[in-house]
Every structure is written in C-alpha cells, then in structure tokens.
Length: 307
Image 1 (cartoon, rainbow, N blue to C red):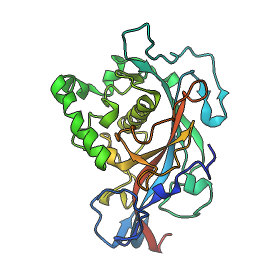
Image 2: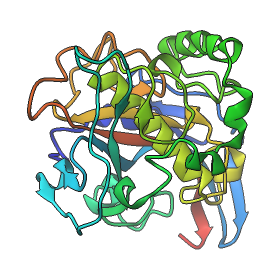
Image 3: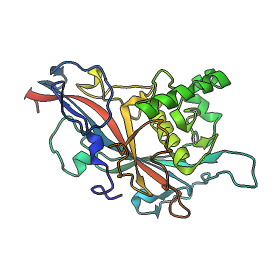
Image 4: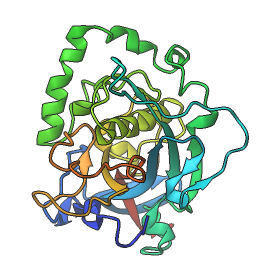
C-alpha cells in the first residue's frame, strides 16, 4: 500500500469542531450524540473543545496462503505452525463455503505520516502487525469460536437471518442498523466470528464480511476499544458488542478504491459491493484483499491544562 496515493483521504471527513461541521466534502457520518461545544476531562485534566472526525487507524487483509502478507510486500513469515489454507467453492463442489486467514495491522496513518504531531486526539502509534489468525485456534473452528459468540445460538434460524435484509438496505442507504448486530449487512451473517464464509459469492463480498468479523472479534476480546460518543471524548472505552456504525472501510489492495462513486470511496460496514466491487478481484495477484478501516473519533481537544 502506498500511504499517500492509495488512501481515499476524503474519508477522514466530515470534520466537526465545537459541534459545527468545518468540512464535510459530502462524506457520510452518523450522529454519535455529542452536542456540547466545550468539554472537560479529568484524566488527564484538560478543558477544551469537542472535535469529531474519522481516523484511519487499522489495516485488515484477508489472504489465501497462511503467513503470506501482501501489505508487507508479499513476504512469507511462516514460523512452521500448521494453519488452514484458503478454500472456496469450485464447479465440482456443491458447497458455497470459503475460508480466509486474516491479518490485523495497527496503522494510525495521520500520526505515523506526521500529518499531525503531539495531538491527543490521534492514536500515537506506529505501523505494526498486531494480530494474525494463523495462530488463533478459534479462527478455523466454528464450534470452538462459540466461546466468543454464544449469542450466535439465538440467531441461527431463518427469521433472524431474514431480518438481515433490513440491515443490508440500511447500510446501502447509509449506516447499518446496530440493533441487528448479528448481521453483516449485504455480505452475510456476522456469526460465527471465524474465517468461514457460509455463502461465498465473490472475493470482495467474502473479504468485506471478514473485515467486519475480525473487527467484532477484536472488540469481543477487548483488544480494541471504542472512541466515539460522549464516552469517547476523554479517551477510549471498552465496547464488547461492536457498534458497526463506528467504522468505514476502503479497499487498498489489490486495487485501491480511490475512484469516487456519488462523491464517496469509503463504505460503511455491510454496504453492498455491487457498485464499488466490480473489477476488484482478478486471478493470481487479485485474490487477496486489504482494507483500510476509518474509525469514528469524538475527542476533547485540550485548550488548557495538558495539550
């Protein structure tokens, strides 16, 4: 990924300062409930002004070959651990299942590109490979992953899955319906939180679903915290049940999705890939996928006390 040319930087917007939209570029947003112009925090102590934007914070890739990392130039870092490889339906099989390994990178672009420095509203970290599912026994075992998502038993029925059509419609029109948290929008079911896609339609659809699942999985395991709303103004807070409205995603590999459709090149979780996914998958080098995750950030930008 070229961090300059392969990123749709307009996805950072809308930018709000003091409750007022400073710049939007016609980008999508949802009301996280922050209405105050001024804010105050106790730890660390500061008084400031409320700021809202979408921070490019994580990079997620879905791959066919275990321990192959397209975002690191295609390098193989195989430590000798046996891990399941990619599987997808063929003309000789009646199954529609597919399986991918997924890699999770910490990638706070605005900070490590030094766009902004010493800003308490940005995650101050470096590019880092933080999680890869090849060493996670839950990722390839739908029964074992029940430990993380026991509530999946409530939604393993046609009525619950049929309700996901409403989530698909909501995500295509705007943001997904967070009440239907077991749905992955137009891509399929959010559960189980593993690498098996029960209804594989195409690589773009399957990988988009796995981006949702791995993000949800990270929330369940308390490895990532939420950063939006009034609770997020003074720092991150745990959110075991992911609010999928907090994320927008943009494909960066194999074909960077920087061409705008209706003025937008990022998609909320669950949006149909019919309009933006065409031509993104092709044989050989175009069957692995990587996505930049933009995270909703509400913050109290310090004006007094600490920066």
